[in-house]
Length: 607
Image (cartoon, rainbow, N blue to C red):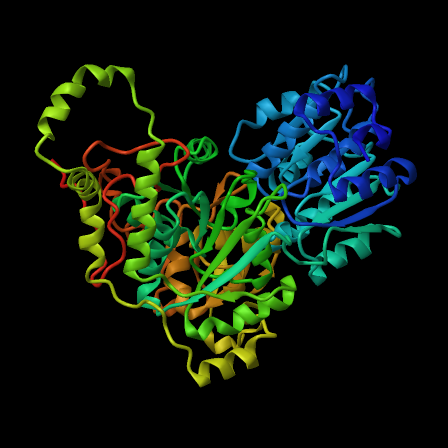
């Protein structure tokens, strides 16, 4: 089947032809004809990289009347990056359609500019929930004539605390509108949306529910907690041509791992919510151009990554919610290509591996952290291949006689040894003291894994009030605050997962929330300077005021920033002739230093 067989308008077919698209993917082949012929509600279950945007975007274009100048189609996405990617695709699909206008609205950018796009007659709007709710309250956008609402990556929106926002959005749309819901997983919260807001939806599933791509390998390595970073470096060194994403659980860990990698000479940069939007755009631009080989990211920040050639996903930490593993692994093995998803786990985390296996319908391969000899061999042959494929400039010819004269007393074998040694000696020296990083799993760990494998510890942890710290917030329902917004604010500003937040109570002028006591000071510090709808939040311990509750508001704060240390000058460049670029380049910017006994890398001293 080709796109011509699906009944799309000529202008859209021309745009697809410009892109070189001829045959629809499985989800497109199933969804598009049904959506065009029946105009029913839809639940689409598929991983990223399967062509979901075209699956809902192309029929959306066909069902939109571009002679009218009001919002007819709404696409809601969890993050700015994903929203921008969807909007870019929609503009590409409609570039030959006369009168078609696509608007993108999201937080962190000028609301006036976005309002101008809406008032300019946009028929299709791509939005993040928070900014959309804001514009609805300001009456900048009206959803009374929307025909179709698309909820893309619905499971992730719920994980981010957007449930109440989604409810508010759907309640403002006409009763007869259609809802098309796309999700990588189908937890009960997503099923509840389908039940409450959809009428007899048809379901399209690519593969099995919650499974990952067939061309994706899953490998886990068992390591001691203290060796986690060292093991990461071994894996990176074993794959010199890696082009991947390293996932950490928190923003702080993301920055720390990225800083260490850059200081150790690796081609890596961080991507997390503490970066400004300009910084995030710059990092993503470099990653897409392969100027950097590894992105160290949080789950939320990585939602907008749409790159087809990623070879590896590395779970430096397993996600707090095991269902999120499918989102992470979906960054690789896209467009039919092969990919590898790696997980670094301590013996106590074996239970989560078993739980993930049940969700994805696949077993992990148990890998062995490579030895120093294995890493050295991989790096050596990568160096040799790079030398063999290096372009020789004609200008070198005029120096060749003098060069040959310098080497006339040496045999060919000696010359090769000298050139290889000049590049490779630091790696060999570094790994001479390497040790085995593989951790053994005890019978007790296995028993714990079997017992806990079916449970999600993040969701089922003990919520005894004695272990909770209750906080007071100076805003409530009157300010537009809801439970989803509270959850999102606490997690984003305090660098904790949603599973660490307990009960949330909302009142007209104030609110309360609870977190595990071990995170109390972290939350108090993190919420300093937090805002909601442009107003500063004052967060303090609730309870006995006699003890003198500590508080942090937009003016206060007793501690420093939440990152220790700087990037140390951004690493160093190259040994000998400097860093190489291109398809055969190593991911190390300079001396290869792997993971040894003390795991110290060679670094250039600052001048």
